[in-house]
Structures are given as structure tokens and as C-alpha cells.
Length: 330
Image 1: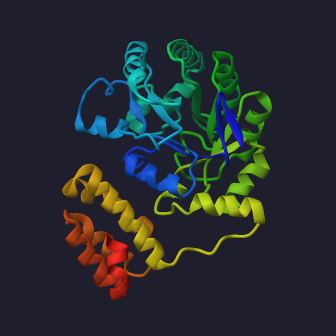
Image 2: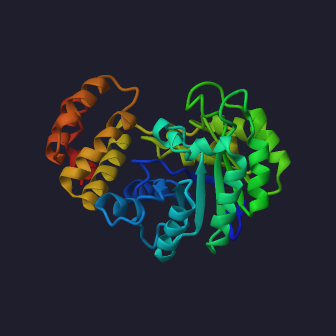
């Protein structure tokens, strides 16, 4: 269990914000599998004011989708203030500020991980956010810009002084993106340097890797991201491994397909059939990873736009017993 301001997160496993992934249907699914705190997709403060279909789908929520956090991306005080004013009408529990996104077009604007190069500016922006919201504020960072500029400790101290309630840290530099070894040592040093909770992420793809992160860093909790893609069972696997020291039995192919259809159906209800199917296609290979013929399925799905077409494709490679089809697809 970890406390972030007035929020009690038990178990201390948090669903990270992921662009194009952590929409309402995805969060609903993850909460069914044990995610106590979840984040919406990352929101750029420059786009929040616009009432577009895309921005509305990013901020959509419901009563059971709690506690809920929103991660903001930006570096311009004017847009940050406007964004904070807009989200006052949303039912949120937490605001996270992004200083970790490694994407080239983001850092080119001096946003995301680009702010790791400007600790004092980041400190100033955090103070501005803290002053203009009643919600708890956290900060997402990386260990540094590159191996020659590891400054996570300095930035974490700035964040604490600015009033942040927790630090989320990905154990790689911006230069690494999502490749290479996770820097457990720096995460541990950050944990020892501040009094606020430190939540770690990076390579948490199994119960064993979750325990390794906790053991080697002493962090207060885990932020789960890519490991959850096609694998909502990760939350249960981590809880089981930490409690018993053994891995739970992996889900059968039929169970994976059933959960995949649950996810697909919810996306269709939320977005409509055409958009729901198109957006869902990226999850196909993730749910069926490791199975034979998955490359053909992924390639063949690239032009499909209806549930019927998608079901027909899956049936041709992964036939389901007739007596289970209705149960799985509906």
C-alpha cells in the first residue's frame, strides 16, 4: 500500500498514462483485473481547450473509473493555466506533470523529457501547477537526458520542494527511449533522497520483474505500462508473485480470446463500430503474442473495419469450439 496525498493505493500498482491506449474501455478492463489507480491518456495542455472528438474521448470517464489521474504535457505557463482551468470541471483525483516523454517532436518543443535539461524551469512550472489546483500533483521523470546527465535526484528534490506528492520515475534516460537496461541504482538513490513516495517503472513485464524492481530500489509502488498491453492479467500475476513467490497459471488461448472480444466490444460501444475496430486492431498482436500465425493475422487485419470481418479472420486461424463461440463473442 502507498499513500499519495489523500489517496490510498492498495496494492501499490498503478496504470500509467499511455497515448492511444489508456482510454475508458482500456481502463475499465484493467480495473476488472485489479488496477486500483489509473491514468487517462496523456493530455497536451495546448489541445485541452478544443472540443474535438479526439480530445473528448481522451477525457471521458464514469463514476466507477476512480481514483483517476490525468497527466499533463506542456511547458508554456499560459497554456498550463488555461488547461488547469478547463480540467476543474472533470472529476479527477490526481494531476501528473510529464517530464519523461521521449518522443522527438515532444522534446523538440522543450516538453516532456526535454524539461530534464531545464530543472529550474521544471521547478517553476510545478510550483505554478501546485498553486493553481486543489488536487494532488505528481511528477513523471526519467533518470536523465543521457548517461552523462543523470539528474533525477536533483529534479526529485526540486519536485518535493515545489509541493509534489509523489515522483514517478522511469528507470532509463531519454536517450535510451525504452531500450537497454533499467537503472535500478538511480531509482534507489532517488528514493533515499526524498520523503515523498517514489513509484518506479521500466521493464515490469512479470511478477518476477516487479519483485526485482521493488527489491533493488526500495520504491513505494510500481507504474505499469507496456507490460499491460494484451496482458491485463499482469496486475493479478504481480499480486500473486509478491504474496506467494510463485507465478500464477497463464491464461488459456480461449480465455485470451474471450477477454480480447470483451475489450473489442467495449471499444465498439464507446467509439462506434468502424472507429472501434480500427483502433482495436493494434491490440490483436498483443493479445495473441507467441501464438503461431499471429503475423499473418496482424497483416490481414490492417484493412478490416467491422467486427464481422475481424471475427471471420480470427476464426480462420484460431477456431473456437461452437459451444463457446456465443459466450466469447458477445
